[in-house]
Amino acid sequence: MKKNNENFWNNNTHLCVNLKTQLRSDRCAKLGKSYPGVLRRDVFCEEFRYDDHFTFVETVPQPAQKRNPRVYDGDYITITRRSDGSYHPNFKPMKVDKDFSAARYASGVANELLWALEGLVEER
Image 1: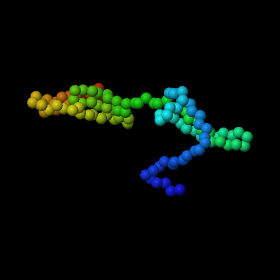
Image 2 (image 1 turned 30 degrees about the vertical axis):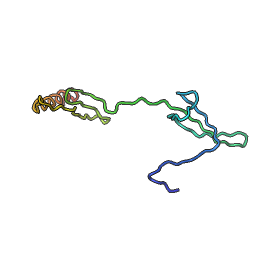
Image 3 (image 1 turned 180 degrees about the vertical axis):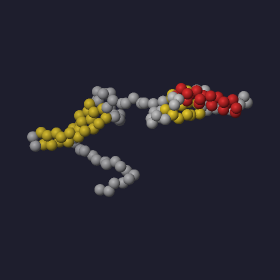
C-alpha cells in the first residue's frame, strides 16, 4: 500500500469488539466527549474462539509548563530563559507621546539591561 504524504492516518473499523474502559474523570464514557489515554488491543481467547478485545486507560493530563520563564521583569524589558539555558531580552511596548524622550528611553533600556545581566551572568 502506497502512503499518501498528506494523509498519514491509517483508518480501520473493528466490528463487534469488546471495549473495557478505565476512566478517571467519569464513571462511564460520555457521548461526544474525548478522553486522553492509551488504547491497547488485547488477545481474548475462550475455547477456540478469539475475539477482538480492547482496553482503554484514561491518562492524567499533564499540567502545562511555562516554556520560557521570565528571569527579569523591568519597566522597559523582560528577560526570559530558553530551554537551552540562553537568555533572551524582550522589549516591552513603548508609549510615544508628547512627553517621550528618546535619550531617556534609551538610557532606561541600557540601565535595565546592565542591571539584569549583572544579576544573571557571573563575572569571569
